Image (cartoon, rainbow, N blue to C red; front, side, top):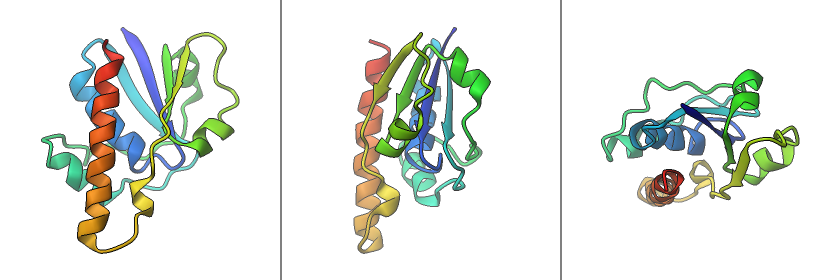
Length: 133
């Protein structure tokens, strides 16, 4: 089974949503996510994923696991910070960069902030579907 690793800064929001879709949509892949830091699981990410019938509430914010990192067939960075700080991306295997806006930094009313989370969720879902193709 192929391995995919989704990397982000704090492994709290974007990478958690991607991991959730990965578990549901990528049947031929082992899926994990990690961060340069750990910021805990973002409650709004949990909420908007539940709206699409994906439960990420038991996932945990984790630091990059170097063993899994080095064994991955595909590494996907989800933000510029992860891309810049992951200079150790192996020469073997594939790397993609999805420059996704961080909805955790959204400002405004709760309705506006959740709209940003839903927009990012939609972009993530479409990107994950492309991995199988």
